[in-house]
Length: 59
View 1 (spheres, rainbow, N blue to C red):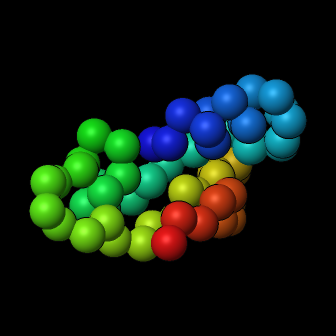
View 2 (tube, helix red, strand yellow; view 1 turned 90 degrees about the vertical axis):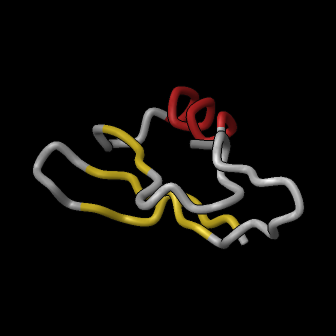
């Protein structure tokens, strides 16, 4: 999970319960591999009632 999105969540306080980055894509924080190009991925915001939406995109 990019720290910038956690800071944004805390600053903006949107009506969501949390954030997730499904599938641990290569290149996301903590999943970097030297010499391997980062995969595109989405940060998903989810609500307490189970709804999901794209909160941020990383390409």
